[in-house]
Length: 315
Length: 298
Image 1 (cartoon, rainbow over the protein chains, first blue to last red):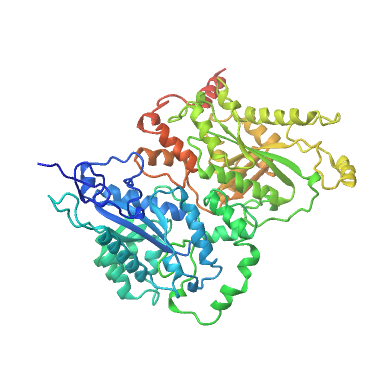
Image 2 (cartoon, chains in turn red, cyan):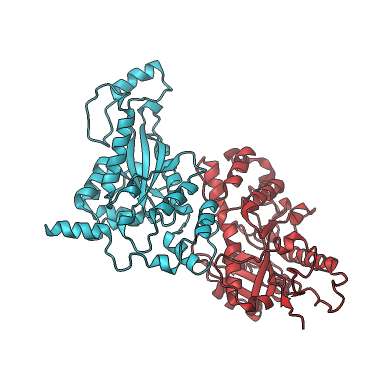
């Protein structure tokens, strides 16, 4: 009797001697074959039957900061600790320029900065799809897009099995979850900011991993909303053990005033900002974003900017 | 609440900007003493915030930052070997143009009081520039030298050139925790506190400006030298304490983006922090407490 194991990343059954069931899964999905765990985490046998998860963070990332990056690390640790999940990938999706938020640097720059920030990460990647669309789109649509991408990439690589003797289990589709800070959860309450059916779809079909923030009561927000309460089993509240409230707003202000932002965001991102003259005092007053913002304001953009960029409809 | 002079106002807006020629500015070296067990992004931020603040007053020019990890003889619980702590600090400052690590303190056999470390570095700076000096009136280390007249002469000749006769001043860089630790019985000698704020100066980066101001108000020594105590506000709650880092490591939690990447890799490679390392010096009395209590008995 051949001893089959389960792949630690995808929870698929493996033939003995193989590492992954599917020969050429996109690198992005498996992080080059490495099991994404924090250092020193005890990986019990249960790990092999865990549900694979992909974390998606939407936001302005204007610019990306160490705090955004921490969200991923904290969320991953939290999910792993439950014993039920295996986080296989993280995706950062910078918002479209058409979001027209004040001082929003061009998407091409925001994407480039995220890419630089992720150079040292082996499991998080940036996806420019949202930023490349013709218009701004609601979070749920971004989730749907990435979910279908996950589905199609798995079905592509499902082909004839290797040995013919035992058919492999159908690839387990990773669960795509929205990663955000507690401040985003709060914005669900703001009238007209989110469509109710979207909130429902997000928490029902996908799920949310919400990282705590100082001054926010995530549990309270959930209790205050019938929809959130109903699906609270699908809302994971992760606690950030090391409070680190770096706001992109502060970063932009500091840069505008010529103050240092070193150690608040990766060095490579700081160099990029300097090389491309972003977030200088002048560029923040430049016409484009403010001019377009003048006058008509649509509901999704009515949210005043709060400090954390990784939000839902409020980005 | 007591008044606070504008130059020390806890504000991230620059107080009155004094328009001084470079040669009139006081060159400052920021010295941070501590365990750095391990060094974190927060430690590094202290330097950046302090530099921006002092440069922003228009009276100072920060020319260097020094991280001076404490020696093993400090005997703090959980303190790992100075060798590693020094290397991590060096990795952390690898990409810094102005902050560096000094190993003198960590190499001493016995624990060295902070005032002594300040004195050592001040002397070192003076020795470095003394061959450039004429025979000046030797003032006490740390005091601003009265180069006003000479400065003006230099100004006329080469107004943009810094006055090489000025010796930089060493100032102690710290967080509120140090300021408040002045109140812990036997932790500091009162004459040392006087030296630190009297002869050198303190730059305290604080989140809770009011608490720090209150602390200064309630201490006669600090109050007397308040002109030499600069409070810099840290708007971002950046509570990356080394204790929490060590705790996270013991629990297998990620410390990415809280410490420089090179430091994180080094810690991982050498498995520096675990339950064992946290028990080092357990039950042992902290060196300053031991020394000060013993001295008090004499």
